[in-house]
Image (cartoon, rainbow, N blue to C red; front, side, top):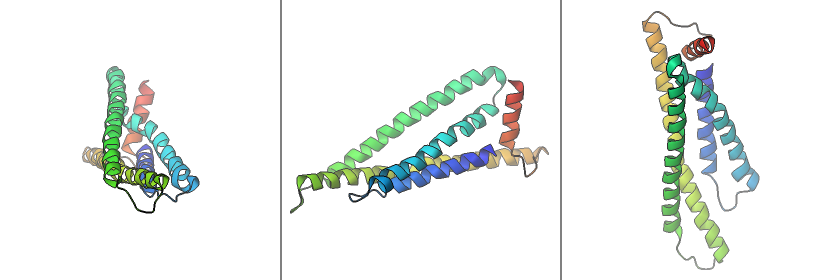
Length: 172
């Protein structure tokens, strides 16, 4: 169940980012910002717990502190690197769009430049959750395949990640 939840929440991230990439100068707050932000928040908030359980469930109890610290560190480094990449993309797209337009007010030109930068950054941003979704699918399938080769395949109701998570909870 946790693996399925991780896949669903990662898909929500993809949907939210694609939706934000559709932002235009005529978008309303409700449909251009609030809606996609709620989808992103639901996806991000719901993905953290299953991700942590999946990562920490395969670790020995003595190493769980180190694994948890490594997980948190990688999340922080990944977020920082992602923001740096997206800000660079935003800046490059904004500079490329910053050319004078005849018969347009400075405010309209500013909005057009901002929207171009935001659209471009979010269109590139969709790569990150798509990559995470691909990795999650491959890892989950790999765990299932390894379990079935060992003859320890769970029933259709159970998933390997849940079995590992239950073992982790029982030990703690």
